[in-house]
Length: 145
Image (cartoon, rainbow, N blue to C red):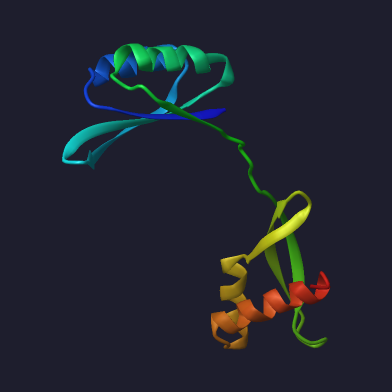
């Protein structure tokens, strides 16, 4: 995927949008820019590699733009896994579910389930923040961090 952007002074926006969408452009947006006491329009859009040159040609033909910036995009997302952790002492062990967010097999962040924090907080009459800290510390201890 590629992000394309360019600046131009005047064009028929509706016609340009129609042509771009018809030829594979997505996420089209315009911004108004004030520069050197002039008003310009900036268009930003996303395109697959297959449509890239065609979209550039459409922009050059339908605007007064002389320069187009193209950025290669990589779409990365976090994987997540639900685990559980035990907290408390042997007489009062309680379990809390945790969402672990991974990127390339490395946990980047964790998030305890809010319902579990609330339930443990009510049972033990401790503030939610204290329970959350205990859960995170227990998770770190289990994962040797």
